[in-house]
Length: 132
Image (cartoon, rainbow, N blue to C red):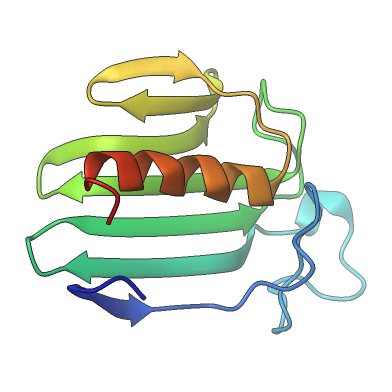
């Protein structure tokens, strides 16, 4: 944990290799459900509040169909900023696909794995926090 930060909630991800992460918890879908009946499944949610007012919030879902134009079966939103100000964000939005927000600029993001996504996000956060 980072000094000056408070962990507010966490779900544990296991086996997050590539685009097929899993969570050891009950799924929202039933064993007999077909693809059209499957719901998004929350895999990970974590919120960290820093003493200086900054917040990190990370949410990752498994979705039954890719969010176009993304081709993987994940929906995610990673946020770092302050109330009303997004300094860093990674997400995949319908119609936009995987992309990154950094200090007001939006660029395409080449999603390869959950591990790389998290590494890239935390690298940006550390850069803005002066290595903290």
